[in-house]
Image (cartoon, rainbow, N blue to C red; front, side):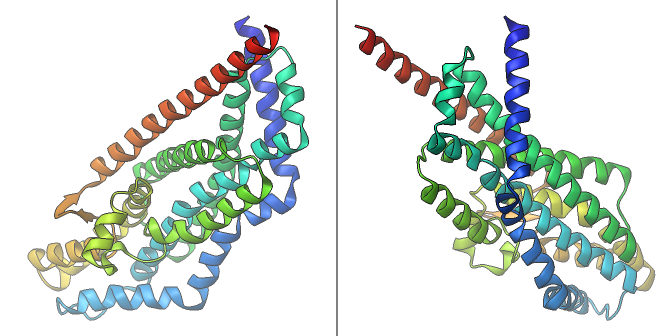
Length: 321
C-alpha cells in the first residue's frame, strides 16, 4: 500500500510540475518581479546603494573604498533582494494549478481514482515547492556568476547557507500560497492574489527599500512578518563577506574601533541586522523565526487538508443514506 501511494504521489508531482513549466504565460509572468528588480538596479538603484554606502562611511571620515569591494557589497544586496522576492512570488504563480484543476474538472477525475486526497493535496504542495526551488536555484546561480564578475567575497559556508535560506524561504512561500489558494475557486481570485503578492511583497519584506528607512511604527509592523527574516538571511550571507573585508580595509586606514562602528552602522542601515521593538535580531534568531513559521504553516496546511477531507467524507456518507 505504501509503495502504491508513493508511486501515485510521484506521478502526480511530475504531472503538476509539467503543467507549470509547459504554461509559458504563467511561468514567464512569475518572473516579472525579478526582472523589475534587475531593471531598477541597472537604471538607478546601483548608484543609490553606492551613495548610501559611501555616505555611511563618510560619517567616519572614510571617503573612498576599493571599487570591487563597493561593487561586491552592492551586488550582494541586489541579489539578496531578487532571491527574497523570487522564492515567494513564484510560489503563487506555480500554485495556480490547484484552481485550474478545479475549473477544468480535472480534480474530480483525480479524486475519482483510487488515490487518497492527502496524497493529492500533498502532491500539489511538493510540486509547487520543487518547481519554485529549481527556478530559484537558477536565479541564485546567475547571482553567483554576477557577483563573481564584480567582486566575490563569499565563503563556502556563505554559499551553503544561501542554499539553505533558499530552501527555507521557498518552503515558507509554498506553504503560504497553498493555504491561501486552498480557499480560492475562481481564476479571477487567484490572478488577483498573484498580482497583489507580486506587487506588494517586495515592499513588506524589505526587498525594495531597507526597513530602517521606514518610520519606527512601520518598521515594527514589517518585523512581525516572517518573510522579513528570509530577506535578512539573504542579506547577511550575501554581504557579510564583503563587510568583513571592508572592516579589514578600514582598520588599515583608520583604527579597529572606527572599523567596528562603521560596519555596525552599515549592517543596521542595510538590514543585515534588524531592530524589532528595540531589540536587535541576529542571524541565528532570524533563521529560527523563519524555520518555526514553516513548521506552523505545515501544521496549518495539514489541518486544512484533514478538515476538507472530513467534510467531503461526511457529505458522501449523507448521500449514501
